[in-house]
Length: 307
Image 1 (cartoon, helix red, strand yellow):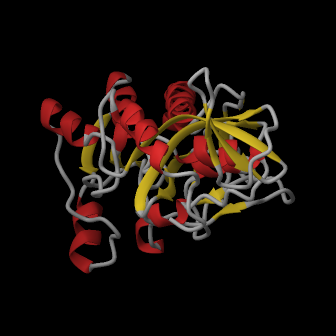
Image 2: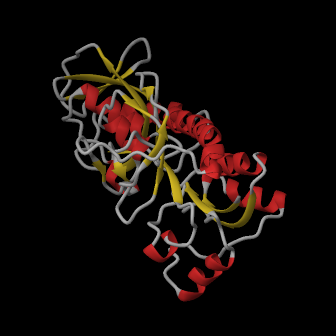
């Protein structure tokens, strides 16, 4: 089967390797570099280089030249995994066996942007990847399969992202033979229960210390590494908060800080308290970043209302 592959990040590279391992001919690969605020490796580019695969230059595939280049590949099927642009109808019509993607949620839940982040922020009980056909909507096409898993309180953005990638590789490996043979499932998404995740920007991560502890916990773990982190400020200095957990209630106003005798760092929240387990001043990295942040708090008694 002749395959065009569009993708990025570890999930894209691992799925591209599955396609190659199953003996399919990859006739064109498109990828892109991470942005300045993104902490992932350009893994698909590495596979292209190591395997000597042909590259495609298009991204949005809106120009006649880009569409012609892809059409000239004569693909039987197209996969877009770790791809952030909607493919135009001219592209969807090219591969006779369709264009498919893997979305990092259990469609129709969390269609759209940042499904890993929103699953945690919204306290979803479960998630998992969906292998589906593209249509002209936003993540609305027919389903081939899904691999659900439970989200626990031990999960954060890094672990859910990793679990999505692991499950996605297995999901694609399972259904690739059927897609090649034309026997894979193709089921319409359920008519009800659809939700959407809006686009996120780094500056959208500002913490409101008036939220109750569970909401703060979900907010921080949904935005932690490899993402830019939740945003706060102390003494006019921007802070990235990486990990918190609900703590025993202490008489602290929202945003008010207290360093306990046992070394724990508590901060008041709406109707409760959270413990800060990891935070750093913006730009600070390394194993001493949290200790430096905690020492500096001796001069300040609270987080500022706005970062």
